Image (cartoon, rainbow, N blue to C red; front, side, top):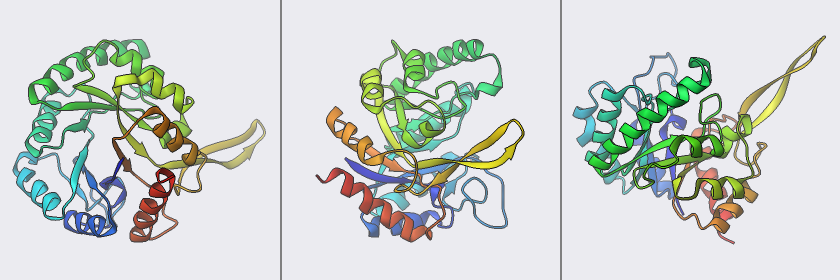
Amino acid sequence: MKYSVFTASTPEWTPEEAATNLARQGWDGIEWRITDQDEADEPGFWAGNRATWPLTGLEASIDAIRAVTVSAGLEFSGIGGYTRSHDRSNVERMLAATAALGAGQVRVTMPLTSDGDYRELFDNTRSDLVWIAARARAHGIKALVELHHRTIAASASAAVRLLDGLDPTHVGVIHDIGNLVIEGYEEPPAAFQMLGPYLAHVHVKNASWRAVRDTPQGTVWAEQWAPLRDGQADLPAYFQALVAHGYDGWVTVEDFSTAQPLANRTRDNLAYLRSLTSA
């Protein structure tokens, strides 16, 4: 396996700092966050993230993105896009940019279940993915659907229904164990078997549930991001299942916990991942 970091989780670093620091720590690659974001007084994961490239004017940034990545000696594990599947003009831009960078694969985001009737969302998104698969083929790359809580693709079984029959050379799935702690968890060996050739990429983070308040009706719980070692996902068992399945692709970390300073967090995460796959 090869290891990379998604820059949504490195908000304090500029692109140059992110690439340089990760390369020095021994990471194999980087997965750039590309989206138009809100400004913030302090850098955060979702607003004011300094390691994010804007979608606006993306084409003019291609050479800079490539130069920052290559000069650090890193590979692209993919591109972390946020473009919705129905936004065909911007999906096309993301596919073209990914091809121009030689990054190989790019995430296209799925509708939230709160966006409307599930069946209608599913049918419309399936049509979008037929189009996306054809455009990804034209660009010689792969479009990725991430298993993500509160979307129409929250589980492996939902993603299989969504992609079934499409060419797995050009569409695939990001399996994300941290998201699945929140919604969509299925035993990893079964999930990998279900996905079959659609298992294209792995994201790793961890999460846990905490009691936030007691009410007369019962305890209210909410999810929170956790360090890789501390959340509810059994990462040793998860990586054992990945190895047993024969997965040998990219593993991209997106750790949104803040218990450790950023540099310590990324360094420890790499050591931990290597310890899980070295046996």
